[in-house]
Image (cartoon, rainbow over all chains, first blue to last red; front, side, top):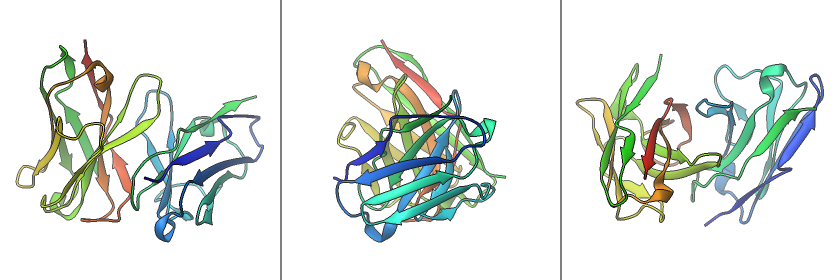
Length: 107
Length: 120
Protein backbone atom coordinates (compact mmCIF):
# COMPACT_ATOMS: atom_id res chain seq x y z
CA UNK A 1 0.00 0.00 0.00
CA UNK A 2 1.28 3.42 -0.96
CA UNK A 3 1.72 5.81 1.96
CA UNK A 4 1.45 9.52 1.24
CA UNK A 5 3.30 11.95 3.48
CA UNK A 6 2.38 15.60 3.30
CA UNK A 7 4.57 18.43 4.47
CA UNK A 8 4.61 20.72 6.21
CA UNK A 9 1.90 19.87 8.70
CA UNK A 10 1.00 23.54 9.01
CA UNK A 11 1.91 26.44 6.77
CA UNK A 12 1.53 29.95 8.23
CA UNK A 13 1.36 32.60 5.54
CA UNK A 14 -0.21 35.97 4.81
CA UNK A 15 -2.74 36.77 2.09
CA UNK A 16 -0.97 37.43 -1.18
CA UNK A 17 1.92 35.10 -0.40
CA UNK A 18 2.81 31.95 -2.29
CA UNK A 19 2.05 28.56 -0.74
CA UNK A 20 3.95 25.40 -1.62
CA UNK A 21 2.60 22.10 -0.31
CA UNK A 22 4.39 18.79 -0.70
CA UNK A 23 3.06 15.24 -1.04
CA UNK A 24 5.59 12.41 -1.08
CA UNK A 25 4.63 8.82 -1.91
CA UNK A 26 6.34 5.71 -0.53
CA UNK A 27 6.22 4.18 -4.03
CA UNK A 28 5.77 5.62 -7.47
CA UNK A 29 2.19 6.72 -8.16
CA UNK A 30 0.99 4.96 -11.28
CA UNK A 31 0.63 7.32 -14.26
CA UNK A 32 0.65 10.26 -11.83
CA UNK A 33 -2.88 9.48 -10.68
CA UNK A 34 -2.58 11.96 -7.84
CA UNK A 35 -5.35 14.30 -6.73
CA UNK A 36 -5.45 17.30 -4.41
CA UNK A 37 -8.46 18.34 -2.34
CA UNK A 38 -9.28 21.41 -0.30
CA UNK A 39 -11.44 21.25 2.80
CA UNK A 40 -12.85 24.23 4.63
CA UNK A 41 -13.93 23.80 8.28
CA UNK A 42 -17.32 22.12 8.48
CA UNK A 43 -17.48 21.49 4.75
CA UNK A 44 -16.99 18.58 2.40
CA UNK A 45 -13.72 18.22 0.50
CA UNK A 46 -13.48 19.86 -2.92
CA UNK A 47 -11.43 18.52 -5.81
CA UNK A 48 -8.72 20.93 -6.94
CA UNK A 49 -6.28 18.93 -9.05
CA UNK A 50 -6.30 15.50 -10.71
CA UNK A 51 -3.68 13.71 -12.74
CA UNK A 52 -1.10 15.59 -10.67
CA UNK A 53 -1.47 18.79 -12.71
CA UNK A 54 -4.93 19.16 -14.24
CA UNK A 55 -7.21 21.70 -12.59
CA UNK A 56 -10.75 20.60 -11.85
CA UNK A 57 -13.69 22.52 -13.27
CA UNK A 58 -14.08 25.96 -11.75
CA UNK A 59 -10.79 25.98 -9.89
CA UNK A 60 -8.93 29.30 -10.16
CA UNK A 61 -5.64 29.30 -12.01
CA UNK A 62 -3.73 30.42 -8.91
CA UNK A 63 -3.87 26.71 -7.98
CA UNK A 64 -1.39 24.52 -9.80
CA UNK A 65 -0.13 20.99 -9.36
CA UNK A 66 3.15 19.49 -10.44
CA UNK A 67 5.39 16.51 -9.92
CA UNK A 68 5.67 12.88 -10.93
CA UNK A 69 6.67 9.51 -9.57
CA UNK A 70 6.91 9.96 -5.82
CA UNK A 71 7.11 13.73 -5.38
CA UNK A 72 4.21 16.06 -5.96
CA UNK A 73 3.55 19.71 -5.21
CA UNK A 74 0.48 21.91 -4.92
CA UNK A 75 1.21 25.59 -5.38
CA UNK A 76 -1.10 28.47 -4.63
CA UNK A 77 0.47 31.44 -6.35
CA UNK A 78 -1.15 34.22 -4.31
CA UNK A 79 -3.21 33.30 -1.28
CA UNK A 80 -6.73 34.66 -1.12
CA UNK A 81 -8.64 34.74 2.21
CA UNK A 82 -10.76 31.77 1.13
CA UNK A 83 -7.66 29.62 0.50
CA UNK A 84 -6.85 29.21 4.18
CA UNK A 85 -7.97 25.63 4.70
CA UNK A 86 -6.85 22.00 4.90
CA UNK A 87 -5.35 20.34 1.85
CA UNK A 88 -5.11 16.63 1.16
CA UNK A 89 -3.45 14.62 -1.57
CA UNK A 90 -4.71 11.21 -2.69
CA UNK A 91 -3.36 8.39 -4.80
CA UNK A 92 -6.38 7.24 -6.80
CA UNK A 93 -4.53 4.69 -8.86
CA UNK A 94 -3.98 1.94 -6.38
CA UNK A 95 -4.31 2.31 -2.62
CA UNK A 96 -6.67 5.32 -2.80
CA UNK A 97 -5.21 6.49 0.50
CA UNK A 98 -5.05 10.13 1.48
CA UNK A 99 -2.15 12.02 2.92
CA UNK A 100 -2.55 13.28 6.47
CA UNK A 101 -3.12 16.84 5.29
CA UNK A 102 -1.51 20.27 5.39
CA UNK A 103 -3.19 23.14 7.16
CA UNK A 104 -2.70 26.55 5.56
CA UNK A 105 -3.35 29.15 8.21
CA UNK A 106 -3.25 32.91 8.35
CA UNK A 107 -0.01 34.22 9.79
CA UNK B 1 -25.81 20.37 -11.32
CA UNK B 2 -24.58 17.30 -9.53
CA UNK B 3 -26.14 16.78 -6.11
CA UNK B 4 -25.34 14.06 -3.62
CA UNK B 5 -27.47 13.87 -0.51
CA UNK B 6 -26.51 11.49 2.27
CA UNK B 7 -28.89 10.25 4.94
CA UNK B 8 -29.15 7.56 7.57
CA UNK B 9 -26.56 8.69 10.06
CA UNK B 10 -27.20 8.89 13.77
CA UNK B 11 -26.35 7.48 17.17
CA UNK B 12 -25.92 3.73 17.44
CA UNK B 13 -24.62 1.46 20.19
CA UNK B 14 -21.41 -0.54 19.79
CA UNK B 15 -22.16 -3.75 17.91
CA UNK B 16 -25.16 -2.16 16.23
CA UNK B 17 -26.04 -1.67 12.58
CA UNK B 18 -26.90 1.25 10.35
CA UNK B 19 -27.51 1.80 6.67
CA UNK B 20 -26.40 5.00 4.99
CA UNK B 21 -27.92 6.21 1.72
CA UNK B 22 -26.73 8.69 -0.86
CA UNK B 23 -29.26 9.98 -3.35
CA UNK B 24 -27.78 11.36 -6.55
CA UNK B 25 -29.29 13.81 -9.00
CA UNK B 26 -28.09 15.72 -12.02
CA UNK B 27 -26.09 12.80 -13.41
CA UNK B 28 -26.50 9.56 -15.34
CA UNK B 29 -25.89 7.63 -12.15
CA UNK B 30 -24.90 4.29 -13.65
CA UNK B 31 -22.13 5.92 -15.68
CA UNK B 32 -20.03 6.67 -12.64
CA UNK B 33 -18.22 4.80 -9.94
CA UNK B 34 -19.14 5.90 -6.44
CA UNK B 35 -17.49 5.68 -3.06
CA UNK B 36 -17.54 6.46 0.62
CA UNK B 37 -14.91 8.44 2.49
CA UNK B 38 -15.07 9.09 6.21
CA UNK B 39 -13.57 11.59 8.58
CA UNK B 40 -13.31 10.96 12.30
CA UNK B 41 -13.65 14.02 14.55
CA UNK B 42 -10.62 16.27 14.15
CA UNK B 43 -8.91 13.76 11.84
CA UNK B 44 -8.07 13.45 8.18
CA UNK B 45 -9.85 11.73 5.32
CA UNK B 46 -10.07 7.94 5.10
CA UNK B 47 -11.17 6.17 1.92
CA UNK B 48 -13.29 3.20 2.92
CA UNK B 49 -15.27 1.82 -0.01
CA UNK B 50 -15.98 2.08 -3.73
CA UNK B 51 -18.15 0.48 -6.40
CA UNK B 52 -18.09 0.54 -10.19
CA UNK B 53 -20.84 2.18 -12.21
CA UNK B 54 -22.52 -1.10 -12.99
CA UNK B 55 -22.13 -2.34 -9.44
CA UNK B 56 -20.25 -5.46 -10.44
CA UNK B 57 -17.03 -4.68 -8.59
CA UNK B 58 -16.58 -3.37 -5.08
CA UNK B 59 -13.62 -2.56 -2.87
CA UNK B 60 -13.35 -1.99 0.86
CA UNK B 61 -10.53 -0.76 3.06
CA UNK B 62 -9.06 -3.37 5.37
CA UNK B 63 -10.30 -1.37 8.36
CA UNK B 64 -13.93 -2.01 7.42
CA UNK B 65 -13.79 -5.24 5.42
CA UNK B 66 -16.40 -7.72 6.56
CA UNK B 67 -18.36 -5.11 8.54
CA UNK B 68 -19.23 -2.38 6.02
CA UNK B 69 -20.63 -3.18 2.58
CA UNK B 70 -21.17 -0.83 -0.33
CA UNK B 71 -23.95 -1.32 -2.85
CA UNK B 72 -25.99 0.70 -5.30
CA UNK B 73 -29.41 0.75 -6.94
CA UNK B 74 -29.01 2.41 -10.31
CA UNK B 75 -32.75 2.47 -10.93
CA UNK B 76 -33.13 4.59 -7.78
CA UNK B 77 -29.89 6.55 -8.32
CA UNK B 78 -28.90 5.67 -4.80
CA UNK B 79 -25.68 4.50 -3.18
CA UNK B 80 -25.71 2.58 0.08
CA UNK B 81 -23.34 1.67 2.88
CA UNK B 82 -24.54 -1.14 5.11
CA UNK B 83 -22.76 -1.02 8.44
CA UNK B 84 -22.64 -3.92 10.92
CA UNK B 85 -20.74 -4.64 14.13
CA UNK B 86 -20.07 -0.96 14.61
CA UNK B 87 -17.25 0.16 16.87
CA UNK B 88 -16.41 3.43 18.59
CA UNK B 89 -13.68 4.00 16.03
CA UNK B 90 -16.30 4.04 13.26
CA UNK B 91 -17.54 7.37 14.64
CA UNK B 92 -17.10 9.82 11.79
CA UNK B 93 -18.71 11.95 9.14
CA UNK B 94 -19.36 9.72 6.14
CA UNK B 95 -19.11 11.38 2.75
CA UNK B 96 -20.55 10.01 -0.45
CA UNK B 97 -18.42 10.82 -3.51
CA UNK B 98 -18.90 10.48 -7.24
CA UNK B 99 -16.10 9.15 -9.38
CA UNK B 100 -14.94 10.70 -12.62
CA UNK B 101 -15.59 7.50 -14.58
CA UNK B 102 -17.43 4.21 -14.38
CA UNK B 103 -14.42 2.16 -13.38
CA UNK B 104 -10.82 2.56 -12.25
CA UNK B 105 -8.93 4.72 -12.33
CA UNK B 106 -11.16 7.57 -11.21
CA UNK B 107 -10.90 10.48 -8.87
CA UNK B 108 -13.69 11.78 -6.65
CA UNK B 109 -14.90 14.90 -8.42
CA UNK B 110 -18.11 15.58 -6.48
CA UNK B 111 -18.87 15.13 -2.80
CA UNK B 112 -21.96 15.18 -0.64
CA UNK B 113 -22.16 17.19 2.56
CA UNK B 114 -21.79 14.11 4.74
CA UNK B 115 -23.77 12.34 7.42
CA UNK B 116 -22.56 11.87 10.98
CA UNK B 117 -22.39 8.42 12.53
CA UNK B 118 -21.77 8.24 16.26
CA UNK B 119 -21.09 4.89 17.89
CA UNK B 120 -21.52 5.17 21.62
